[in-house]
Every structure is written in C-alpha cells, then in structure tokens.
Image (spheres, rainbow, N blue to C red):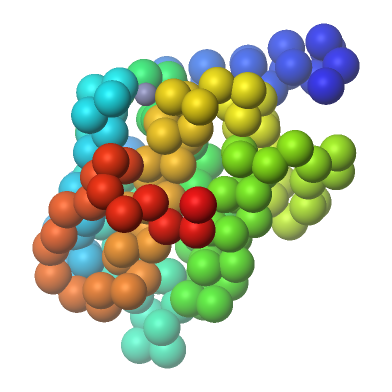
Length: 158
Ligand code: ZN
C-alpha cells in the first residue's frame, strides 16, 4: 500500500474509534450478541433489529477496546442497514478475506471497510478487526435472543 493511502486509512480508523457511529443501545433489538476478544481485551455488544422481510432494519453497538475493534464495529454498522441476510453474510466473507488474505484489489463493495486491510500484517489485530463481524455472524444465525461469542472459540471460515 502506498504511504499516503495508509495515512488516510489510519485517519479514518482513528476518527471512527473516537466518534463511533451507531454507538449506543437499541432497546427494541431482536438480537443481542456479546463479543469478546480476550487476547486484546476488546468487547462489543451488538444489537440488531430485523425488518419483517429479514433485512437489517437497525443496528447499534456498544463496548470498549482498542481503536481497531471499535472502528471496525462502527464501519460495519454503517454498511449493514437495509441489507438482507445474504448480503450481510457476503459482506462478512469479503471482509474476512480482506483482513486475512493478501489481495491486490479488494472489492469496491466494501467501501470504507477497506481501511482495515492493513491489519492482515498483524495476526493479533485481525481478531480485533473481526470481533464485530463474529458477533454479526452469530446475530444473523440466531434471529432473536441473547448470546455470546469469542474470537478464541471455533473461528469460522479460517
Ligand atoms: Zn483489540
């Protein structure tokens, strides 16, 4: 990656970690997933409300942790509103590839999420970046209720 682009990406990550979007409670959420990354100490509480047709109607998160984990959650929630389950799952796969595989040209559909591609050089940071997505994956499977996921158990798609 060229240095200018890397600088820009880091600025986006910092901005989202300082002023996370869609941060807070979602009182009438159908699904609540608590995500835990014990390696770094990151926590994400992801709340999702679904449309009757299955699309993501609203999504919010709360929690604390490193800049990568919080920025990744913030960027993720921005991309998911209005998306169908299939689209959300597809985005999870694309994001997983982005942070784990060397690829010259990440899909444009990922938009600002592409700022996370730098973490692939740091295996510990990949867990920070993927935490919110593990919670999302669980939320999509679960439909309603509350549950817990950890980056240290049954890593999916790896
Ligand atoms: Zn972290």
